[in-house]
Length: 154
Image (cartoon, rainbow, N blue to C red):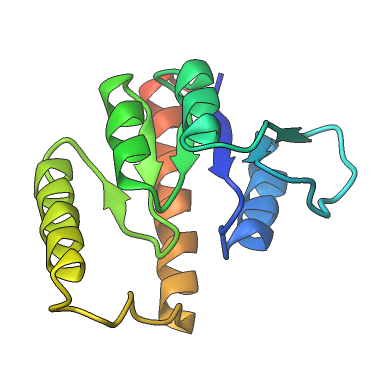
């Protein structure tokens, strides 16, 4: 059954996820290294895991299934979830796919190496209103695709 898993620690689109989940009647699981304020609801669950590298990623990758959606900005987590058949959406509304994940991982590694050498000092561009709009559109498309694949109407 379709569930949305959220790498929640730095996710800027949680409110948008809640809105879409309510509209479709979907369950959402927020996974974080620390407690966060989240609406009290039967469709929303907050899972707080211990602190540590990749603990959130490991938890999500261990639960995600083919008919789930993962929201994350973490490229290695996206790759792991894609391998399990889940759909993966970046925080800015850019879908991670089997077709683009290799390029995204390569670019990530290249930029990491350039930063290590001191050649790049700036980080990613700021989150913009267009990112929020694109995120809502892409999340809606993913839900419709999964439901259609499973013969479920809107």
